[in-house]
Image (cartoon, rainbow, N blue to C red; front, top):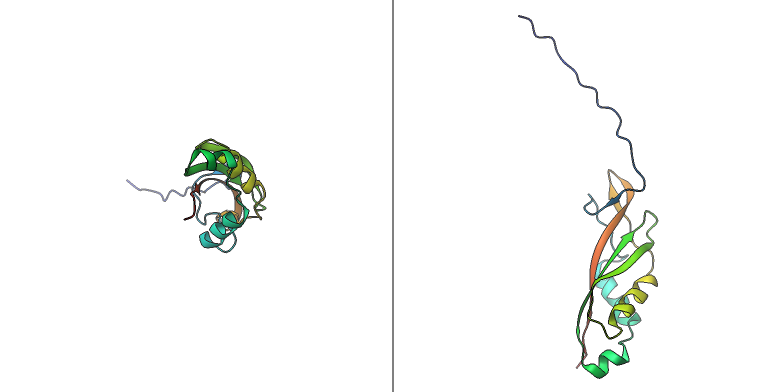
Length: 123
């Protein structure tokens, strides 16, 4: 018997530009890195009075999409602590400078991320 060589040609992959990735080759990030992000948060967050009065501290987990141009969209709280902190976390992210978008195969893509924002009294 003779086995002929079989060649499978890969069809070019259809690219869905609206697809939202959760894991990418190069993850999205705040310009300047995590320390710069925390610095931005420290300057921007106004601790809600209600939370201060009630002694509420904790982490607010916020989910959002980093678009291909670096803007943040679909910002929503996935786990909050209440007393105005959840709304403040969303407000601050809405005012964030553009992020460095995530990349897949060298191209910018939409990436869903979850970030926690800590509300804690400074001593």
